[in-house]
Image (cartoon, rainbow, N blue to C red):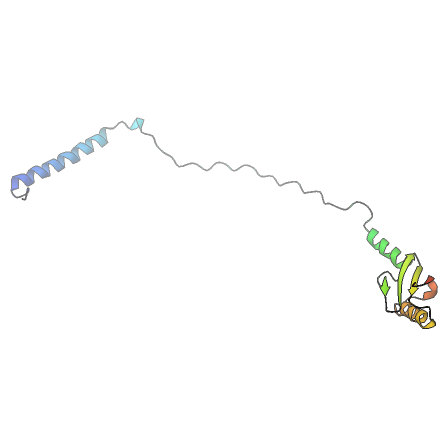
Length: 139
């Protein structure tokens, strides 16, 4: 069943379409434009003024910056074998008791063990005569 078989039906359809278009056009043209809301894109806000941050106070340690160096010099002066002792061998052991005072504990009190200990001190570049030596025998 074809509605658009005759010319009259087609003519009525075309008139209906034209009438609809004209009505839509009339509505568009007669609408009150003053009540329409115009949407504007947001305008860029002025950027706030940026001021450079104050330079942070440079942190410096309090006290004498040469203190570690001075301490190291004192250690080298009072304990010249500091980097090597305490030391233990199979026949003896050595350690500081106080500045420039060595305690040497021998397993057996022999001249060879004493000489071995003194030679060890000399090998480290230290003259044993610069130290007081306290000899002990291991019980």
